[in-house]
Amino acid sequence: CKAMRHLDVSRNSVSSLEGVEEMERLVSLDASNNRIADMGEILRLRGLHGLAEVDMRANPVTKQESYRLFTVKYLPRLRRLDGKDVSAAERARGERLFSNLDYTSSDDDEDARQRP
Image (cartoon, rainbow, N blue to C red; front, top):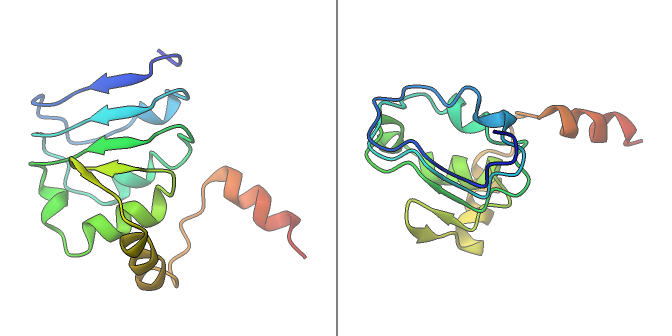
């Protein structure tokens, strides 16, 4: 399962992405048409450094204000979200909007400890 590169869990009444963070080689995730409502579920994907495409369409989380900007901020390697390319302008807006929030992954924690 850790070697899986593409995962499609669409249309399965999924409410959590728990376990996906273990799929270290994941490149694309289709979790559309589910019941994911918490923005915290997106943070589970932060350690997936190869993740380039995520589809969360038709989930309650996508109706939350700033969902897209939050997602592109905390998944910085993402190139496509919900079928649309991620723009540099969106990434910059997400950085500005969420600059005061610190959701660090374990890798980020280690980097932060090494900074002077």
